[in-house]
Image 1 (cartoon, helix red, strand yellow):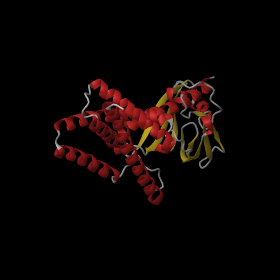
Image 2 (cartoon, rainbow, N blue to C red):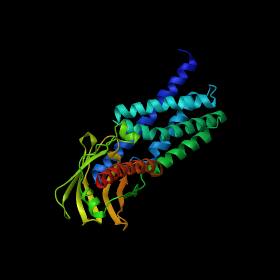
Image 3 (cartoon, helix red, strand yellow):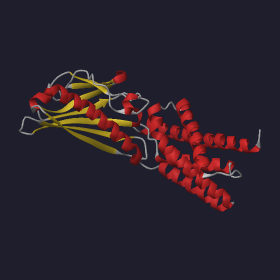
Image 4 (cartoon, rainbow, N blue to C red):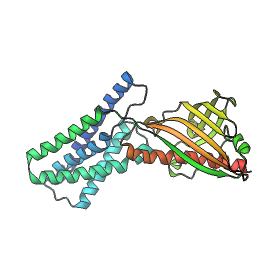
Length: 308
C-alpha cells in the first residue's frame, strides 16, 4: 500500500475511532446520570456535536499533514468522515435516518473546521500550541458535560376558519382520521404524523389520545375545557420513537378559539416541549419546524371539516 493512501486511511480510521469512543463514553455517563438521578431523558450535549467533530478533523489533519490538502480536498475528506460517523451512529447507537439527516449539517461544518484548524496547527510544528488547543477542547468538553442543560419552548400557529366557534369546537376536541396526504418532506420520509384524535369524555380530566402514523399514540389528559373557547391537554405519555421522540418531550397542547364576529373563527394551536439535545439554537430550529407542521396538518383538517 502506498504511503499516501495509508495516511489517508489512518486519518479516517483513527479519527473516527477516537471520536466514536468519546461519544460512547459520554452517552454511557449521560444515561447513568439519567437512571440514577433524573426522571427526564438523558441529554445529548453541545460538545458531542461540536467538540468531537472538531477533534475528528484535527486528528485526520495530523495523519494528512504531509499531504497537499486544498480546500476542495478538505471538504471532500470531511464528507467521507461524516459518512463514516453517521454509519457508526446508525449501526451502534441505533440512530434513525431522520436524526442523522438533522445532525449531518452540524457535524459536517465542524469536521471541516477541525480539519482546517489541524492543518494550520501542524504546519507550524509547535507542540506547545498543539497542546494548548487540545487542552482547551478538553476543558470545554468537561465544562459542558457537567453543566446543567435545560431548554423549553412553545410553538404557536394561527388559522382563520370560515365557521362559528361552536362548529369548530366539535372538531377540536376529537376528530376522525386525516385522509389528506402529507405536505412536509420529513413526514414523507418516515417522521410520524398526526392521523386521528379520540376522547373518552368532554370534561376536565378526560383522557384523550392523539394517534400518529406507524401506530404511535400520545396519551393526553384534558386540563382545561371551555366549550367553544379553550382546550388544554397535558401529555402524560408518549412513544419514544428512535427518530425524534427520545430527544424531546411534548409537554402539553392547547387550542384557543376566538370569535371574529363575522361568521369566522380564529383557531390558535399551541404546543409546549422540552429538548434534550443540544446546542438548542440549532436543534430548536428543526423542532419548531416539526411541531409547526404537526399543528398545520391538524388545523387544516379541522378547518376543512368545519367548513364543509
